[in-house]
Image (cartoon, rainbow, N blue to C red):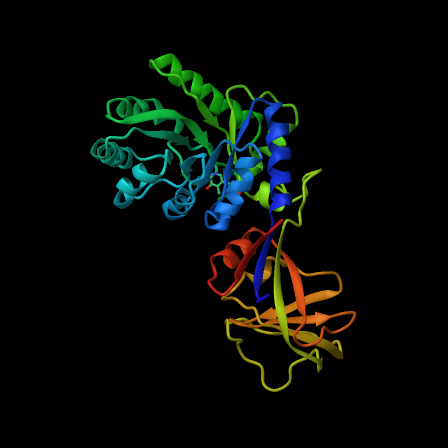
Length: 353
Ligand SMILES: *Cc1c(COP(=O)(O)O)cnc(C)c1O
């Protein structure tokens, strides 16, 4: 098989999704399966749906179009606030979208009217992480404005924490979200079907027995794909952390000095080398570089150390033994490495079971 390649074990991803769906069901929470790190892969999305995920979420309308094209059955949610320039694509392909700006919602309303469709929205609320969200004290005003717009239904509210600033979902901010849902229903003739509490960073809060109250949905990506919670990146018990691996081929295998020689200036990427002298080492070069992956997000196998990367090369120190030219080395990607590899046209994708 060609390399570099990203291999997905669909059975393991299905197991991870099913386990989280079951555990959260006991807490009254359903799962929106987030596909954005996989470019809306229909294979991954299909495995999530089979595992009991109700809704598929992706941040890009192009990925949602890909999943639509594969005739998947789930309802599809655009996670990132729509661009006004894409309003008609959004109402055509997504069943619902997350929103924070009234002018965007107006554009969606017009586009939905034109397409003779209803479009559902989730209003995202700012709870302190300072990425997207309507400030809580203006939420009721926004709801009031949205209710006047034709062909738009407010399906619920949501929040997103631990993305930009690492603000932790806890009983305080989740109670605030529940209170806001209650306040909206008390002020308007409206039932909020969905209160979407957050992402994989919410799992600790959701599963530790805290009162979940109105929160009845979580949008989960990384925990399903990589089997880890995202506050401290610890493995989640009972989940596979090795469902995805990235493999590259050895193109040079030599004994070399560990210390460069000559006058030392900047490297290709503006860093300074500055490696200590550890004598002779076994150095392997893989045909995989920054055009394929984020090298900082790779976990090498035991006995292998990543020395550096350029656009097209990954240099490894083999502590035990060198691999022959033509053989392969596999890594576990973190979320960042997965994103880079998935979006690189140079990396082949394979969906085994
Ligand atoms: C990416 C994203 C998620 C999923 O986050 P994970 O950490 O992968 O679970 C959830 N909600 C929104 C709005 C997102 O952008």
